[in-house]
Length: 87
Image 1: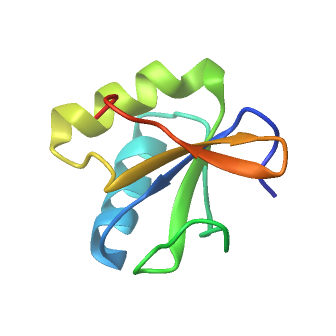
Image 2: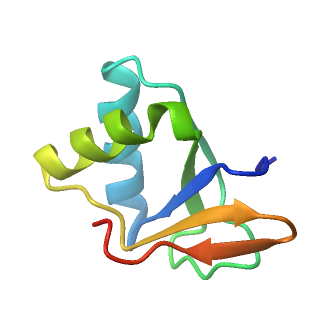
Image 3: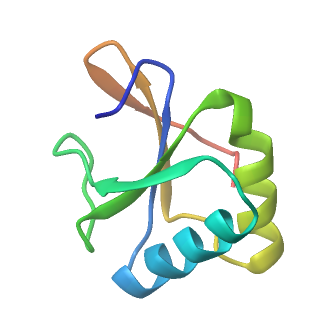
């Protein structure tokens, strides 16, 4: 479900993740709403997955709308690396 190098955005509520999904799909950005991976904690159980090629567009849209994720991870091998300082 999450490929090597993909980003996973974790939000602190179901409302925020759904709002972010609507915003990003409205901007025609290639994202996918997924169940949050077990390896990362998510209060709402859902996350947004996106690839490196759309990262700047996704994160710019979220920042502009005030919907930055609570946590951001990048899939690396079998683990998820937390991205620091990119919010």
